Length: 349
Image (tube, rainbow, N blue to C red; front, side, top):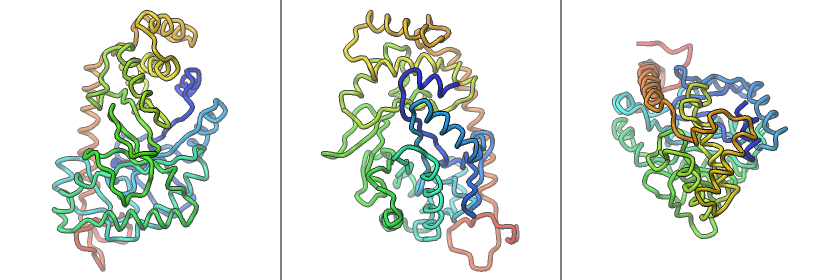
């Protein structure tokens, strides 16, 4: 239903977060690697169900772009490749797990996953997630290892390039430092701020966070959203996305997401409206797409309950993730400072 609604509003690109720091949301079948999900945060889609979503979106004129995290905030690889052993840091922050940049075993895994995703997803773009190197430093310090992000990123870039992956179509999130590292797999920066600073001639994307994560995006009504999106349009990015984050019915309703998406779509399609003009377009379009609560004008409903729900979900994720990822194992040739993938043959201490 949400895809049908997005199509009615004129959206033409759907970004699906297939994997992040929390786990994989999709069960991949074409390669031999095993990936895990944690708690209820991810719904555990199968590739046939993802293909059905992609087909449904394609029939409605929408491309679908996958997102994975290849180096930082990459805890989703925990069943497939070695991750840094920093249990104290991770259980305190629940974020920032990095792959071991000195271990090349991640290369064939990334290649297999990327090629499988590209064989099914319809967008020419693919998202490689975060590049938060400073954030990962505390994890490296605890593991008593030196990060080699430049080396690993260059290896990934060369390997995927050799197999036909165009780095000019690969996105990476803008990092907290607001710094783009020159040796980074992915030439397209994806900004979550209102004042992007792309390099001359650089292709870039922008996202408006509708899920209350970003303080800049906590707009109180549809008019605020419209003005914010209009300010993004002036930068002329390749694409502007709206971060829905959760597709749970209770979250969509509580955040009045349909009305907020409508405000974003008007911001993308109607330039220079004053308040009265915007109100007319908003209300007429809202009723035209059979929306309810048009009189709410995009305001949050039950926002406090949503924040409580998000906090409870986060606490559950923290406990589950900490327990799963900090287990101890004994292996024949352990790599110093590295958590090993799950293996039925290891001996649990």
